[in-house]
Length: 284
Ligand code: KIV
Image 1 (cartoon, helix red, strand yellow):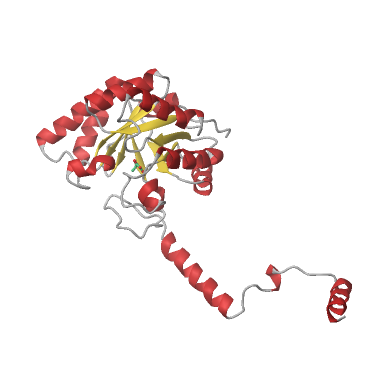
Image 2: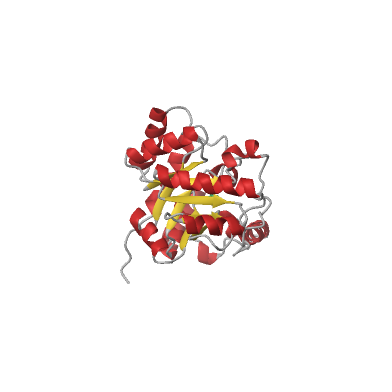
């Protein structure tokens, strides 16, 4: 079947048709190519880039330049999926002008189709409206918002009390009204995400938010098992790449030390007469 590029409209249509939306993160060309060719709907260049790839302790230090650099690499591999990029901490908080310029860099310089903005308060809503008004589609992000985890009291499940759940539902409605075409809902009880998914017209993509959402997202390196860091409860490991890669490296070290790599099949040959000539030149 002929595949076509997924648009924002297609993502909304998937919800209307009751079809689940699939989303995974990517930070580089080879992984993005695998996701895109496997048929994922949305590729997110998450600011999880910080802890997953760049070795930071959190997403807070991630810069615009780092995000744009990795989004460009992912873009080169992405033919079909909708490509969204995370706006890093402080890239959408300073001023409306700076926010729109930064969102524009993702679209103009890096080739993203949409940006994702974490959080919801009066100030952030103004920023989101400005980005949407400038013609850039926005995905909201509620529940556990890692950029402001220090305000939320750490990496904890959000919306566990009736009051907190009500607040997250209201925030979700505000994001929809502000023009987001979708929201990511992270680490909330599944009963809450079910209610939010039903109340919102726009798709709700869950991570640690249960099966009632319109779609699911995971950090690809987590589901590949390519992370030595603590794996959150909501992650399903589809592979154990970290162990497999470590075994491969140990075998390589052993092979090199025992001179069993490279073998003849990995080496290049020189015609015999050229070799003889070379060796005789070497003697003279
Ligand atoms: O940065 C990220 O990877 C994310 C996902 C967890 C949704 O925001």
